[in-house]
Amino acid sequence: MKTVPIFAGKEKIYNEKMLMLLYDFGPLTAWELTGKITNTSKVSLHPTLNKRLRALEEKEYLQRIDKKWHLRFKGILTVLIIRPDSKKWNNKWEEVFAVKEKLIEEHSKPIIDGCNMDFHSALKTMGLSLDNFTESVELSKKVKQLIDNGRINFDIIKEGTLFATIIMETIPLEDLLKIYNFKS
Image (cartoon, rainbow, N blue to C red):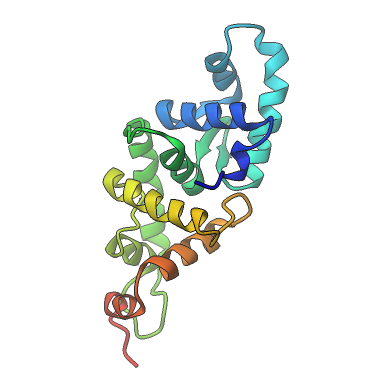
């Protein structure tokens, strides 16, 4: 497997630990993460972790909501790609997914004129629903193939572009047209 760039170099250890901890425990503050990573002086490690958290946020792996750090789509996929087992995420993420799903459904509109499906419904139909663990594991395998084949650089790709790439690379056009009931 090609390395996801955030797991190369000296930042690898903390990046991996922070993503895994968030996956396993749900949203955490920077201080909570610091406490789970070390039993030594939290004060000396905290600035380093804050720097890493901001870098991961800039690359769209994480998002800070209030004082807690949340995994984004790329963050969850990254953990599923690098984790040797397929351990299910912490149940706290189910609540986060439910809130986000409700917001998306409230604001979704048809994607294409003549299409009777909004973006969120289309993703679910394509098996790209992140709130389903089994589908997420399968999706992470597809993304890993895209990384291994050099089709995407996971460190620099934006979330919207990642979605579009996954859709275009994994779902045949005729299936997309059927899903959208597209009328030509």
